Image 1 (cartoon, rainbow, N blue to C red):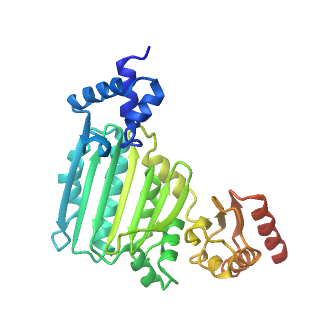
Image 2: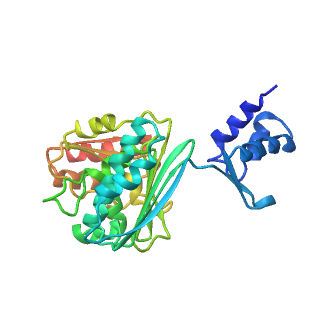
Image 3: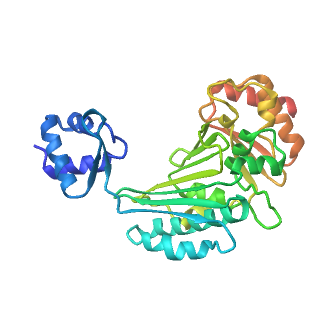
Length: 336
């Protein structure tokens, strides 16, 4: 016999993933009737822990937010990231655990400052959403777009290459005044990050270090969505140590970002798009996660051009299939 609290806890813990089918998921979990599960759902709604939207078959549910705060701000001479953080953001983070508070404080400040310094925006909008389970921060501006800005400043081949450079980390359009560490650090502090601009979306999932790039409807400006669970044990200190102990001498390059949809990874041009900004590195690691197949020309170009650009760096690879291992090892052996 399942208690009412067990059923309600299941609903609350799984609602974010099952907004449209949470009733069905709960029925399958506990083997109770739809009417019985709806009784528990109605209790959660009356307790202001869940909110329902729509009617009958179009109905979906959301956790009642602890914080749901948004603002639209002019980016002008009076725009102050410090004041926005102090007066608007921090008062809305009082309910979150200390480690999540520190992560949000550092990251939101970094994004606001980057918007001011690099976006060429005149307006930004942000939303801070705290539910019983997680924190979301979404920042949108009407500027040039982060990928377009990098593409123009670094004279890259196309927008998708700019997304690859962000995934590699430590990239900046202003190396005399910025080290390029802030965005990379912010990305690795959260469970999930999505960056949308110029028609593409770059996403990072921290639990498996997976990068993906897809199409996006965001054409003007940049939209960045940060997400972290409230029960996350991640800390700024832990992430900073992991990133900066490497002293900026190692890079991990997600190979799957050269693909559009499910196209093969087999051309020399694809390999070349991964190989910008490799100087001053001592280790270059290629991550073949979600890559089952590469062509021999791709492997040869990847190894050969990497060594041309950086003769001292060690080349390695991870998450590779046996076939990828064979072609990468063959390319390495031919070079030596």
